[in-house]
Picture 1 (cartoon, rainbow, N blue to C red):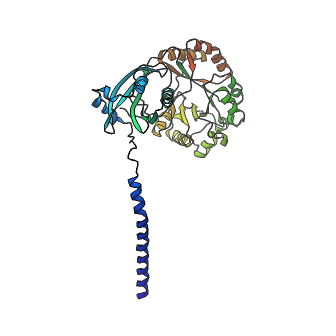
Picture 2 (picture 1 turned 30 degrees about the horizontal axis):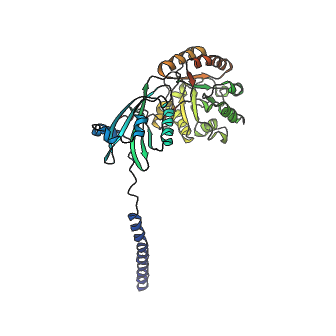
Length: 387
């Protein structure tokens, strides 16, 4: 037994020696790192309800907490260039100090994401940094951010779109969707810039589609049909996703080849009856769409559709559901025109066929005369958070 004891004693001594050497080398480096830590880095708390609840705490003397005349001039007054219709300046407490809180009411007609992009570019051009830019579509103020100067947070800005649109800034978010390959590809050059085009998966096998879409300034998406036909399977389109399809079959219908990855921006479900309302099929379908980091658009027009609800549960990007009105393309365009003028923007989905595109092209001058422009659809992430 004595040799075994000597073995264990040797192992214990070796372990103690190893730990001692590691301690001798670790503690000096750790002390140096601790003594040289960056104590000036500002904390960046999340923009949550607690921050805005403190708004009244420092609102009594704004002159002392709004020393930055650059930001006060930028956000403290209305601005057509930034779309600011009304501005309120108050204060919140952050990092044991009071900083200004700018609450903006923006004009309709331009998507909030486009307004935010313009505001951020303006700030960066003036030497400010943008921190913690947060989108919260269900909140009272759907967007908020920290503004920094150097290493210091100097303001918080939040915004909502509530004011009437300025003249000639009305937006029409337009989707044209196709069920066929040949006719739709010949119509691409006739469509207005900024429109979204949802093509079948087979259409992207054409090597010229990518260049034609980019040249025309169109936004690419996949047109997908969830099972709604009572025809036998043998008579249904190859792209249609049926109730019994699993993940492999769904993938085969979404990605005809690898070139679609990184090029197509989203998926528009433009057909569905039983399929769009079936939570099992929709769940499998959305899981595959989320894997590709695509947004989803429910353009089925089916009241029982589960697409938007399940996409929200998965925190997926979505586009606003278009309103289909009128029994003809012309009637739908007239209704969208009036809605754009009254509400600042309108959403419309049209079939991409020869007759529909001809009606659209002939109606574009009427839209232009009223200051309505075709604009890309803003992507939102719906949540239930409010402040």
